[in-house]
Image (tube, rainbow, N blue to C red):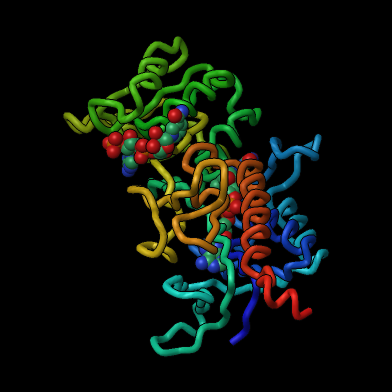
Length: 335
Ligand code: FAD
Ligand code: NDP
């Protein structure tokens, strides 16, 4: 069993930003990047996308995979120890905190590592619907992030669809209205879940149409490799009637699942499972445990906001560790 001052769990922009700051502060952070943790490659959500055009510093954009490889290299450059394993169990009930990897977490087994401080940066996953055609047209018309992908040329002046009835669906539809010829929001019930103000704005928007009691049942398009989606089969939840509509973009806004199972019941999470942090900080409900990135952010969910919160987590951790390891007064006198 090995002890570290600080362990970072996760490998997205939040985790790597925290690692860069902590390693430059010479706190020798250890980062568990995961081995297909929650079904996503080490590097996190951006490894599943093509061009990232809204991360500052890359005027021509940068591939998601390349951006994350760069972040990983920068973490390593300053001495972060990166371990390609998934943390499967975390015991926060006493200090130092204990953690196990998925290769060795049988009951009674020794923890892989202990740590004075832990940063949870495990991210979140956009929910998918597993519609027929979804796999084929994912990123070829289908996206789970309008802010990330909406400005792509394939969506310009084309009929676009959003699925969901919450604030995200409302916000994404109005954002997409800048690009598409029209944006139709499919809502499975007869009402929106979105807050009143967002619902009112959406319903009043001249380019947005809300279709209540309607679900999508199939994505249709060009069958060639990398062919784009062109139509959607939709179905009424009232009478079961189906129709095929022209649709060049489909954006899911059916919620995200934060990867917080590791800490469930050990630190405070909200009713959707997001880790609760003290506003403006990375402090969780437990001293010594910090959180950054999408696992604690259901509002912005962007690479740059995750990176920013990773910086906050590193600085909060640094302060915590310096107080923890402060030499007590009598001992100082002896020195
Ligand atoms: P995540 O990226 O969510 O990564 C966390 C990773 O940590 C996990 O994926 C996994 O690999 C690892 N992990 C999880 N659990 C464990 C564990 N127990 N042990 C070890 N490792 C673990 N944002 C933008 O700003 N611009 C864009 O253009 C953009 N495009 C996107 C396109 C797509 C398709 C998606 C899905 C998202 C996109 N986003 C974009 C959003 C952006 O990717 C996220 O906001 C950001 O990646 C969140 O970063 P994070 O640090 O929270 O970690
Ligand atoms: P929500 O969970 O609020 O909404 C998800 C929506 O997706 C619901 O309308 C739900 O329908 C629908 N849905 C779920 N599964 C399916 C499915 N299988 N088929 C069709 N529809 C489905 O998630 P959001 O991401 O919208 O919001 C998350 C949180 O973030 C909320 O607290 C929200 O207020 C907040 N937020 C705030 C914003 C703002 O203030 N501007 C912007 C974005 C998010 P149903 O209603 O029938 O369950």
